[in-house]
View 1 (cartoon, rainbow, N blue to C red):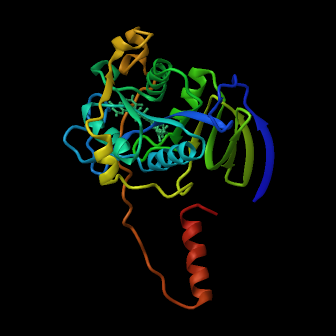
View 2 (cartoon, rainbow, N blue to C red; view 1 turned 180 degrees about the horizontal axis):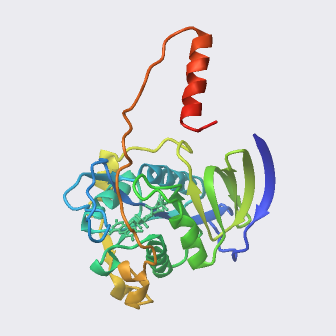
View 3 (cartoon, rainbow, N blue to C red; view 1 turned 135 degrees about the vertical axis):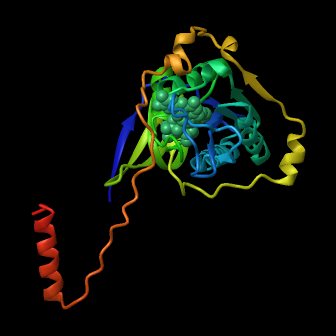
Length: 286
Ligand SMILES: Cc1cc2nc3c(=O)[nH]c(=O)nc-3n(C[C@H](O)[C@H](O)[C@H](O)COP(=O)(O)OP(=O)(O)OC[C@H]3O[C@@H](n4cnc5c(N)ncnc54)[C@H](O)[C@@H]3O)c2cc1C
C-alpha cells in the first residue's frame, strides 16, 4: 500500500465554531432500505424490482455512515439528520436511525419518484438536501446491496456542486473548515483534505455501528419523520424525477445462469497436467 497526501475540494467554508472554538457540524446521512433477501422478483414489463411485501433492512454500508456521523457529532458537536428516498415502508429504516441517535429524519416519498435510476435518485436526494438547509457534511454508504452502483453519492455531490471523496476508511479530523479523510483506492491509501461542505462515502469496517437502544428509543419518543413529496421541492418539473427522469433503460434483468458441469480429475501431477492441457486445447483456450 502506498500512502499519499493530497489536497482536495473547492467548496465554500461553512464549518462554524462551537463554544470550544472548534468545528460544530451539521451532518446529513443518506440511508436506503434494501431487501433483506436475494429472492426479489422483477416486473417483467417495467424491469422494476417488486419491493412490496418483502422483508427489508437498512443498507449495511449506511450503518457505518450513520455511526461515522455520530462519532463526528460526539467530537465536534452539531446535528445528524437522516435522509431516505423510498416508499412509505422506508420509514422503518429512518426510525431505526432515530433510535440509534439521529436528531431528525426526512423521507422523500411520492409515486412520481418511483422507478428512479441513479440520476433521478441522486437528483431527488440533492433537491431534499437543498431544502434541509445549511450543512457541512453529507455521509453516504460506499454502495448498496441491491442497486450496488456506488454512484448515488458522487452524483449527489455533482448536483450540489460540492467536493466529494469515495471509499473513506476513516474521517480523521475536522479543522479550519476541512475534513482529513483516508480513502482506499484499492492499490493505495490516500489522505485527503476536503473542504466543507462536502460529501464522503464510507467503506464498511470504518467503525463499529451502535445498536438502536431502548434508552435512545425512549428519548426519541414520538419523533416525527418529515415526509416530502415533489410538491415540497424547489424543482417541480416531473420530467426530472422517477421513471421520466431516468435515462437508463433496463432491457432485461435475470439471475446469472448456474453452471453445474463440473468434472473432478484424479491422478499423478503429470497426468493431471496432461489432462488439463488437452482440455484447454479442446476448449480453444490455448
Ligand atoms: C430503470 C431503472 C428503474 C429502477 N426502478 C426502481 C424502482 O422502481 N424502485 C427502486 O427502489 N429502485 C429502482 N431502481 C434502482 C435504483 O436506481 C437504485 O436503487 C437507486 O438509484 C440507488 O442506486 P444504488 O442502489 O446503486 O445506490 P448506490 O449508489 O450503490 O448507493 C450508495 C449510497 O447512496 C445512498 N443512497 C442510495 N439510494 C438511496 C436512497 N434511495 N435514499 C437514500 N440514500 C440512498 C446510500 O447512502 C448508499 O449507501 C431502478 C433502476 C433503474 C436503472
